[in-house]
Image 1 (cartoon, helix red, strand yellow):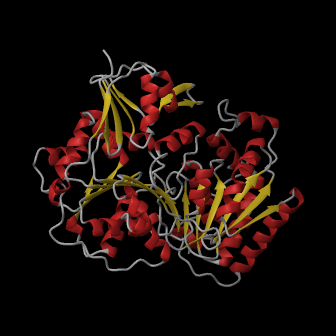
Image 2 (image 1 turned 90 degrees about the horizontal axis):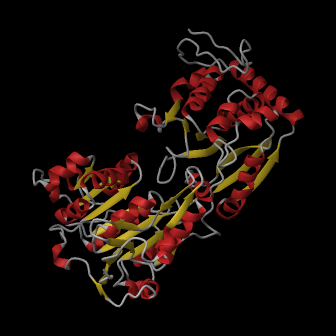
Length: 538
């Protein structure tokens, strides 16, 4: 049976009556190789085998698709399906009012782009918009102002549930909306209640939901049900927060929802994986985009790389190997937890940060290592027992943990979209990565001027050296300044001894604190305790 037609929706290109494999040269554009499983993964394209429909990105060049299909004897036509008529969207009875005007020219320019005004008026008939705002530039404000101006019901889709509360609090702060105007869609049960008309949630103005909630519901109930959800709620505007994340799921949502406008908002419009980034570029190729990073005025954080050698043995290097990526992150971090040089460097670094004052976020790759670092801090600085927070999946109250002075986390838990206020330091302590995207995201965790991004670089492993080199261009572009400090082996113990003396001097000042019985310190080797100042319980 021949391909009958191509249907164009605001965010999808649908090829009807298509048999998978008919046009390999077209399908090839969306294949990504996974070196971990040695399999080919399809991203940015979806084939509905039941209805014989191939879904492709709407922003992909339609003429290119037609040429590919013509080579397979496609003689049909293609049809444009506009969004639902404008009056089908829920327009608010009461206009949303903003409490604040745009704070600078960049926010004004972003709003002009998002609203297709001024120099961007030629985009007025477009349905997709890529808004690439640097971290801290006001993506939430600009998105909220867009909703207020267009006065149409909207949904915000994020990667993590913790970020939903950030959006909710910011929207309440920026507008005259009340909590009852905003709905967090949490779990399939809530969606089922909406679809069965057993809920009054259809009367909200703004909806907040995670990728995982929509994916779980779509996979379990069929993605046509996601279409039904958006129609039931009369969603007109769709915002993808940190649009480069959850790329596969973003594609599925685009393929099965038909809204007036879709906004892809992110500070890092690219993917870490080379193949995935190629597909992401194809996906966004014809989407109007705005880049608002100013190399002269935006950098505000200084990057410092502190290079030392953990002096691994050949057995250590072999034990940390991974056949796919070269270095197994988890094994490597566990190796560091039993390495003297690492702990000496940590003691020196933490001592400097503690003396300078200010909040610090430490990136550590795995949870058991995070626990050991926390024990180490309490062992040496027991007055900070209640000031060290663990912000990962093992936290019972993540919101409370992120408010503490010293935060221990992973790049996954405190990654893109996280807004931790008042950070003076971001420290990549024990989490090796080479991703430029991740480097830019972690650099963006500090929002204030005169802040620091510090990375401990282990020169003892070929891979960690290569990771450092791969990220240099990101810091050269986005950091206020870059500095490399090489610490020779002869200096490492001197730095540790200096930190030890500082702690002794600190004790002479008559510290006042109330500590619980001492936590056992991290040990280098069995039966050998870590040197430090020991405080007794009062």
